[in-house]
Every structure is written in C-alpha cells, then in structure tokens.
Amino acid sequence: MSNFTGSCLCGSVNYKSNSDPLVTQNCHCDDCRKACGSVYLTNVFIKEENFESSGKPNSFSHQSDAGNNMTKFFCPNCGSQVFGKNSGRPGIITIRAGSINETELIKPIRNLFLKKKVASTPLDDNLEACDGMPL
Ligand SMILES: [Zn+2]
Ligand SMILES: [Zn+2]
Image 1 (tube, rainbow, N blue to C red):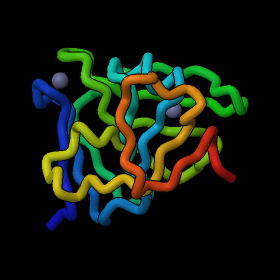
Image 2: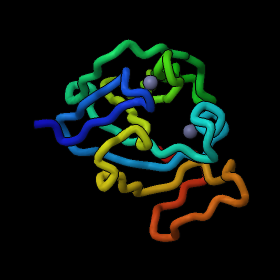
Image 3: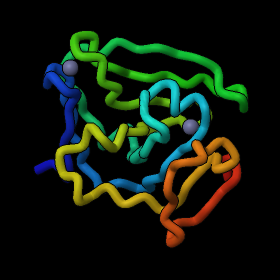
Image 4: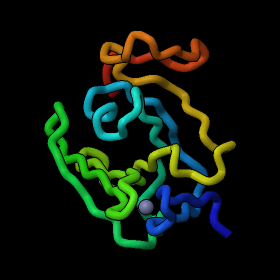
C-alpha cells in the first residue's frame, strides 16, 4: 500500500510514495512561478528511496541562484510538471503538490521567497513566512 499517489494531467506519468510528505512548502520565487505556470508552487518533499514513478517524463535542468542544479520532470504528452530534483538536496524528490491524488495530504507549513511574491496572492498567516530560502 502506498501512502499517496499522483499523476500528470493525461495520466501517462504516474508515481507512488511509500511515505507521508516530510515537508510541504509554498515557493513564490521567479523560477517556480515560471516553471509551474501558476503564481506560486507548492512542493511536497519525500525521500527518493520512497518514491517510484512510471511513464517516461522529459526533464529540464537549470541552475538556481544558489548554484544548485535543478531538474524538473514533466509529461512529454500533456506538459504537466510532476516532480523535481535539486543537487543541493541529494536523495530528496520534490513532488508538485497539484499532481497528488490524495489532496488532503497537502499541508504546507511555510511560504518561501515572499520577497518575490505576486502582490495579489493571499497568504495564510498561520504559516511560517520566509523572505527567501531558510537555512
Ligand atoms: Zn501527461
Ligand atoms: Zn521556488
């Protein structure tokens, strides 16, 4: 039994996670905004060892401001971004929260890169607020 599952819009890229989300956070940085096509991106972190995907996602890599190699995996058919990797966080998969089927598990704890936030985006005051990237 997997803890949660997910897919792209057309269903050709699927995955399952054998753990609950470790951390979930909203990122308001320019890279996430452009890459996901929405004004901010909610990411769910799990360990790569608990992650299994099927289908053949395409990938795109770029450098973050911090100099890390960021790789986005997306469906070649429908274009949905499904998950990503960051060379600065080896062994971690960042799942695009919108691809998760069990949406009740999506519980962000903080907002990142608020200095880049789109002015009209409402914020939940109960979440930790970070101007940039903590740590
Ligand atoms: Zn697809
Ligand atoms: Zn970001």
